[in-house]
Each structure stands twice: as C-alpha cells, then as structure tokens.
Image (tube, helix red, strand yellow):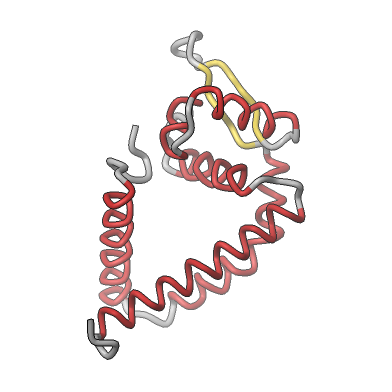
Length: 158
C-alpha cells in the first residue's frame, strides 16, 4: 500500500493510540497490583453497567475469551481485591451477577479521569456533524476489529 494513502495514515494513528492506551492501562494495572486482564474485565463490567446490561461471569468470560475456570479465577481475584462483588439476580436467584465496587470506580476515575476529561474537551472542538462522523468511524473500526478477532456483537452483546 502507498504510505501516503490517507486511510493508511489513519490506521497508523489508530495503532499509535492503541499502543499508548495499552501502555497507560499497563501502568494503571501495575500500580494497583492488577493483571492486564483484570483491567479489561473491569472495563467490560463498567461498560455493562453504563449500558444497563446484566453482567454475568459467563458473559464476561466470552468477552475476554476465557474459559469457565479462567473466568472464575479472574472474578475470585477481583472480588478478593475488593473491586467486584457477586450478587444474585433478583429475578432469577440461580444467576450470579457481577458488580464493580464503588472503590474500584473511584480508583479508575482518579487515574483515567483527567484523560477522559481532556478527550471530552477535545470533542467540543467538533461540530455535531463531525462528531457523528467520528462516532460512525469508530463504531466501524470496532466492528472490523471484533470481526477479525472472531467475536460477534459488540458492547452490550449477550
């Protein structure tokens, strides 16, 4: 491909952002005695809460590509650290739900909050039309990456 191709320049920018976010996440995980998978799990659970999606261990395991034993070990570890708690579904007492503890939310906000605030401020420099284009592009990128990884659905998928 031609290195001057605008689409390729965008791909390189996305890759650079991905690397920076990965390094930032690794720094957060290391500072807080977490495994990188722990951080990904917390993000999945926070996204579920944000979209009012019930978070079960099975759903979390599918999102992270973990088997049942790996998911149980992950949830046990997060629970032991006080970041997650298991509750029973009030409609189906057999089902276990996962909730992120408020202390974990506060911990994440103290580290990632300034970056999130900066990014939200940056979005204010774009028109509504430009933001709609950016959102559509990012959704398409997310779908393409998920498809490449062999995952069906996206955030909120069962």
